[in-house]
Length: 76
Image 1 (cartoon, rainbow, N blue to C red):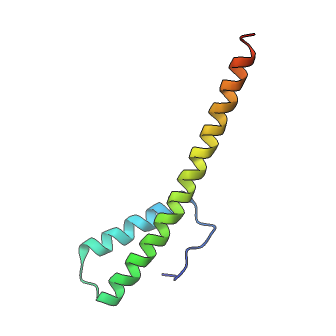
Image 2: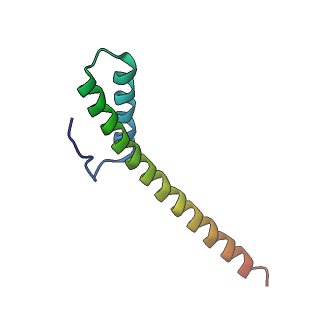
């Protein structure tokens, strides 16, 4: 496990690793230090996922705005 999230992680890679981190935390049996490291990694992965989702939302909003502008122009 690395200390920093690789900026090239895809949404799916970050999500899958986050699922694994949560599974390990829920299973227990780790030391306090290991649990803290897992939690920190999970926070970093959650940020990566959030950035991907925000980017997807922005692209969707832009596409919808373009479509709306196009349909307004054809009404006239």
